[in-house]
Amino acid sequence: MAVPILLEIFMSRNPLALALLASTIILGACVESPSAPADPNARRPTVLRIVPASATTGVDPTKPVTITFSGPMMAGMEMLVVLHEGAVTGPQVGGTSRWSADRTVLTFTPSAILKAETNYILHLSPGLRGANRQMIDLAACTAIGGQYVSAGMMGSGGSMMNGQWGPGMMGTGWRASDGTFGMFFTLTTAFHPGAPR
View (cartoon, rainbow, N blue to C red):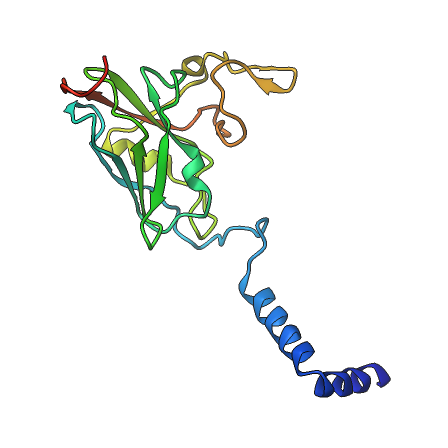
């Protein structure tokens, strides 16, 4: 009984301490732990649209790539969406990724004009999660031209060496429990006078 009474006296004489305690309680109630489990009743996010669409040829090499998700995505998920030149093991294209205000549209803008008349692969990790912590439903992405990435495509043969995936692997989050490595979409750029070749 003495502790609550002493705390009440201390708080009444220290308004700053009271404000700090109140804000800590409110913040603790609003911020979810990163390891908090997903709501089992929440819908899994998927990709609704990619611009340019998968298998598109004649793509303007000066334009960004946008991915529209079915719901808001968790912070940091832009790290699990990569544009490669040539193949899923090809060089990663540098650039900036920006989310829409509601975190449903990711826009990737390359830092330089893409090469002309060149194949590019947009690779989505199976580790992508929605803001509701549900894993992405990649199977639904096949409806918009997505294809599964296999271990053979990654050049790893599906095996690990010294605890690390072989050449072409991109770290944690790129191998699904079914042995696939996410989903890929293709695009081929058009000739453009300002684009390298």
